[in-house]
Figure 1: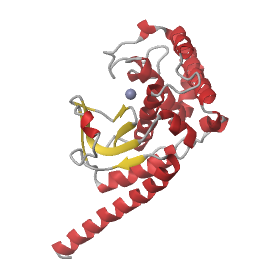
Figure 2: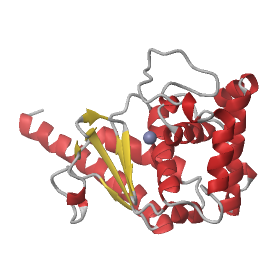
Figure 3: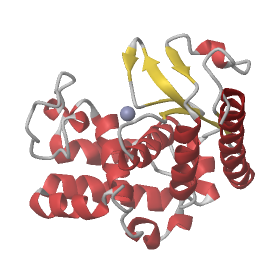
Figure 4: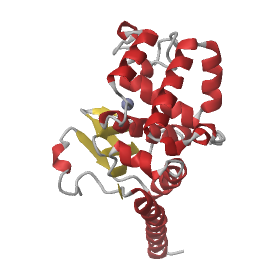
Length: 246
Ligand SMILES: [Zn+2]
């Protein structure tokens, strides 16, 4: 094979990957009224200049194609109403994502989530989508009675503010009431972590819930309030078969 033929083939494969994800995203965009971007950080649509602390590059074709498939599977579980309640308008699938100078797997701002298509494995990528999505639900204060004062009071009654520690690190052992060190950072991260685990690692979470009553209470509270806010999700939403280990 000559170099020019190899280059042409590589170009064709990249174009094909773009078409694959374009097709997937077109279907999701129609159902959820959300736009999907895979552009480099410098190719910003107007309005993105209000995020000077977030930087990213375009992911490679394989990573883009894989994440499009994962997002289609995970987002496809959502009723359109839940997405509407979150205020999600735009998903940026990218690589080399940094926020305030630190490498991150995802980031959310009202209306927009960024996802690092180079995150270490498919299960983490699935969770990142739900984690960032949940932040938007909080930002948007799901009506009626979602993240109301009542919800926050109930949440705080489970383990209190003093249990959180912004400096907690991966080296710390799991503490009672928390699913991992990251959940201990603050209540928002705690809720986003439990929510993403409910959807992607329900089997593993069930074991933790059976051993840790505080985690169980928190998971129940999240489920109860989402159901109040969005009755369209129903019980089946939480009992989807666990994702295959990838
Ligand atoms: Zn978060």
